[in-house]
Image 1 (tube, rainbow, N blue to C red):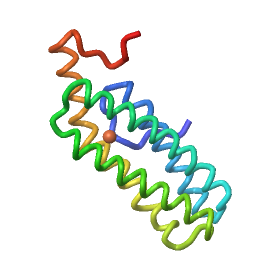
Image 2 (cartoon, helix red, strand yellow):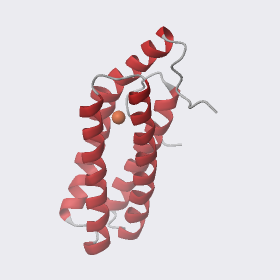
Image 3 (cartoon, rainbow, N blue to C red):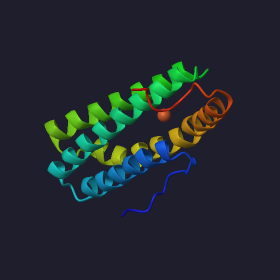
Length: 143
Ligand SMILES: [Fe+2]
């Protein structure tokens, strides 16, 4: 297993998908460095799927716990997903361009770690407080 090099937020529901995202992003950087466009495109598809699913989960938690910063947090998610989609299109159209290489090895892992530290850490603490304070707030939807 790839070692997790993102921040640990002490919330398994968040740390587990974050670990997946960091692992896919690291594999994607390796594929980009070796100019393997097909592998990079497949890894980016996996990263997009994992990320979209996890962001939807975070959105639901933010709504459920009335997180005050949810508009800004959601906007950050939307911009990041657009960035992933744009790079996926670029790889399919033009392969590993210099811009894609720079992005995969720099901006992509930086954004993930920055977002986890600056946005997800406060969200995790908020969820923790909300679930302790109110027994009617649960992370899982009721059946
Ligand atoms: Fe987030």
